[in-house]
Amino acid sequence: MLRRPLAGLAAAALGRATSDGMSGPRPVVLSGPSGAGKSTLLKRLLQEHGSIFGFSVSREARGDTTRDPRPGEENGKDYYFVTREVMQRDIAAGDFIEHAEFSGNLYGTSKAAVRAVQAMNRICVLDVDLQGVRNIKKTDLRPIYIFVQPPSLDVLEQRLRQRNTETEESLAKRLAAARADMESSKEPGLFDLIIVNDSLDKAYWALKEALSEEIKKAQATGQS
Image (cartoon, rainbow, N blue to C red):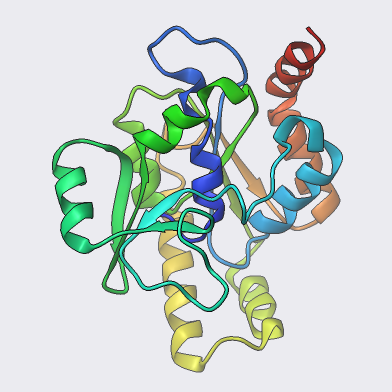
């Protein structure tokens, strides 16, 4: 499932590797428990390669959801806010790359969001949990699958506590989910790369190295 508006922006260029024959940089599916450092790594990647990724996370988000907008969120900017009935209809029609239900709300990445920006020719990162990863595996997309994890659950707990945003109950749930995710990530063929984020610099180097060929493709296209 999609955990944050970032997923929508990432979906924007997933059509890069569809069966329509379009060539160019492959999209990236990024997964991992909350607190593993995915957002920090992505932000650093965008800072260094802005011309390749070249868009604002919040303004380019195109994830569809049935929940009510939070203060400051705008329809068509942070999400497309739709009714449950509309979302269920479109899911049944096969209009979504992936979808899931979280805390009573439906979230998903629509194929329409992909088609709308196929011509952007940029690398996009889709931030999803393992359910989303498995759903995308069933499509004809060819993304690079990367899992980011902390060096240990103890380290993850420390990071989450430092945020001062978790109750003991929510912290316990996040740690249990992280334990399950880290175990599932070992499944053969599920991910192309697992990055253990024990050092931000080393983790970033590993991420950039994994994307080096796609970065070169995007740079070459941008110069042509």
